[in-house]
Image (tube, rainbow, N blue to C red):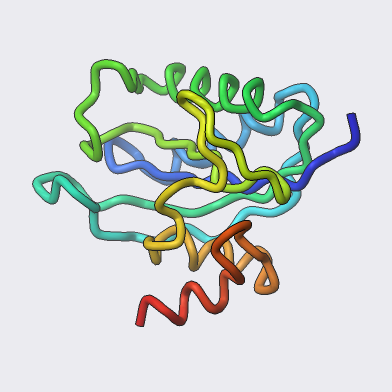
Amino acid sequence: MAPVRVFVGLGSNLGEREATLRAALGRLRALSGVRVVAVSRFRDTEPVGNVEQPRFLNGAAALDVELPPRELLDSLLAIEREFGRDRARSVGHGPRTLDLDLLLYGDARLDEPGLEVPHPRLHERRFVLEPLHELDAALVVPGRGGVEALLAGLD
């Protein structure tokens, strides 16, 4: 399989947020068929949804992967579990030790049970768009348009 450029959102609002994100990046680097190409700076952000929780540290990573989307997602969820997150038992939009969201998988548009790419709300979230713009200002979100225009539309 030829490498595909993928973007993953990174987030944490429990524990040592930055240490958790850096350790998760280390786990991504250790995955077979995954190469971390670039990482955005981390941003301290307000929580979305359930606001009665600590602030988040968010960022994004650009990866070149030789894994199909479902296999990559399974790997991301396994890393989350290693850091104590159980999506089945956690409150939606609630506090979490680690959040790894598959934002973009090349120019693919997928809508399968448990897997939607591009991420269904990335175009509405500054804490996602800013790191993506930092990584690739010319990036286009399939079906939504350029990241730069999406970011400008939030203002």
